[in-house]
Amino acid sequence: MSSENQTKPLRRTQSERSEAMRQRLIDATIECLARDGYAGTTISTIIAQADVSRGAPIHHFPTKASLIEASASYLIQRLYVLLGKAIRSLESSDDRLQDMILASWRQLFNRMEHDAMMELMLASRRDAELAGVMRQLWVAGRDVLDKASEHYFEALNDDVEISHLFILTHWLMGGMAMEHHLMDGDHVVEHFLKLWTTLLAGHIRSRPDVTSPPPRPANWKRLVSK
Image (cartoon, rainbow, N blue to C red; front, top):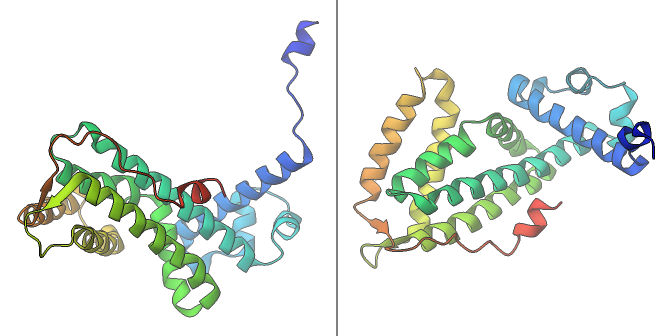
């Protein structure tokens, strides 16, 4: 076999090319949402961001709504995986409570993907179909938080629901993300997250000698393999 044949790249199948184009359009949509907002994200701006022909979106997504829905579904999967990475980083942590909260901020909330997700969340208030897609984020996120928080932490008294405290933490960081562009820097967020951690420490503590990762939620495989 000649060296030319050995180095010749394999041609992608039509299915592979089609999937690559779909992902290119979805990635461009997410970047446009984060940069231009929902109202400013048009087929024209997506085409320019993806650097594709005008017919490409129509071939793969018949309407803007179908492209937005596919992008929302992909974002849910992507944020779900990022949350999993943040949780796995706790295995060797000496202060899991603080590190889980700070890792969640850095891995999820302080990212372009979350900016795009916020735009879709706001738009879903007036779009029932989009709201149905976005509701998956809440269900998946709560499932992960429930399992991770109960795996790594225990309540100091019977009146505390650990997962409820982490839902409040999620809402706290969501509000911080909305105002992040007005702050002087990440040190502002981290100061208040550490203060919040101090308050939480009066109600919960890390489970001793827990080093294994939390069990994956039942819908993990479906979300990450869509």
